[in-house]
Image (tube, rainbow over all chains, first blue to last red; front, side, top):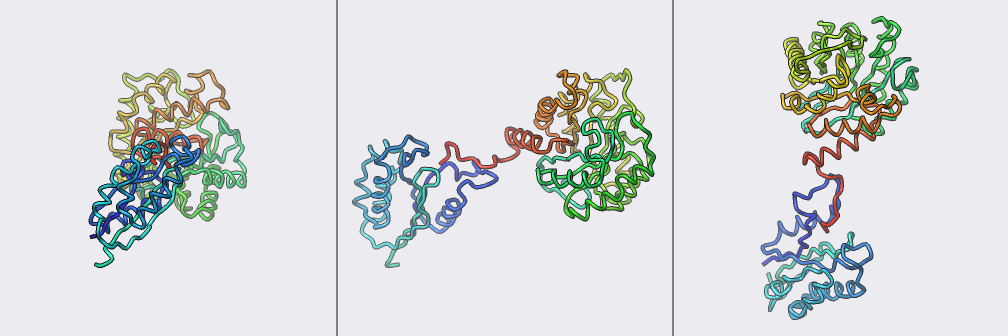
Amino acid sequence: MRIAVVPDAPVLRPEHASLVGPAPQLRAAVAEATAWAERVVCLNGSARRTTTSPGPYDERAVSFDRALLAALTTPDPAALRGVDQALARELWADVSAAGELADLLEGKEWSVRVRYDDAPYGVAWWVLCYERADG
Amino acid sequence: MLKLGHRVYEDELPLVMAIVNRTPDSFYDRGATYAEDAAMERVAQVVAEGADLIDIGGVKAGYGDYVSAEEEIARVGAFVGRVRAAHPDLVISVDTWRSEVARVVLSEGADVLNDAWGGHDPALVDVAGEFDAAIICTHTGGLAPRTDPHRPAYDDVMAAAIADTLAYADRALAAGVRKESVVIDPAHDFGKTTFHSLEITRRLEEMTCLGYPVLVSLSNKDFVGETLGREAGERLPGTLAATAVCAMAGARIYRVHQVRETRDVVDMVWSIAGRRPPYRAIRGLA
């Protein structure tokens, strides 16, 4: 089983293409990961990380994202199921699929590759690739 | 597809044609680039500003001192060669109605003949065909070169512009010019009152749907000045407004003095019309 986690960022949709960028590295990472994966799960971190983020700055955002990324990369299904969805909504984070991802990851060994981890426009975007460690 | 001499355009994006006058008396620049070095600097400047092609003229369109074919060749012939050497990929148009001038400039490396005078010299199309050049077919209502209209009258000015430019295009095709190298131009001000020029602007879509790319030459012209009550140096906003209307109607080539401003207006309208993606859009999409 190969699983990819990508953000559902509207900027990636073909109808929103620009002449230049604006997120070429994310676009390339998402294209590669989704072509490689058998299952794709969409989630992203907070959109309130900085004063230039889409949402108003919230000082809890960065630590929320840090904990979420740790749960994703460990990976820790229990921590993913336990993500505070109410806080996530407050922080404009899209993690409604965290439980679905936890179910996919549960009880198996995984090799995790972080293909993208950045927030160039104030939203925490990740592209993660999960492959069964035991083949 | 559009083929302007050595350059083939597979896309449908708009093109900005910068005016480069080698004249001592043109109405807008008043001889600013008459000297060859000044004209070369103007070429480099408009290329840097994003011009897709340039249009070199050696004779003022309006009344003025007589300019013989020999004098016109002296002004633009070798100059085209110099521009070609300095800018090998640049599309070069020459604004001339004379076939003997056309032969010289095409030999020097020009790509396009911009005949502002509606096919006054019937041999012009033959030279275009012989050199595989592009030609711009304008409507002047039968006006002789370098004359102003006096009481021009049309039953329907757009119908006349369409009929005349298509007839000119047919002559070009018969002379061997490729269809993808024929451009039509309703020719604002030429053989027209301000009311006529406003009407062809308003109705330009009737021309852009004909299957030929349409060139518009609006830049700082009298119809803009008369409409707004502005002198030659004060017509940029009016020019850009007319440019936007023509862009919405789908005009393909814009012959201009101000390259950067025109580029922005045309690109903006092209994007509003859904024909061009934004340069870089992230607002609300992260």
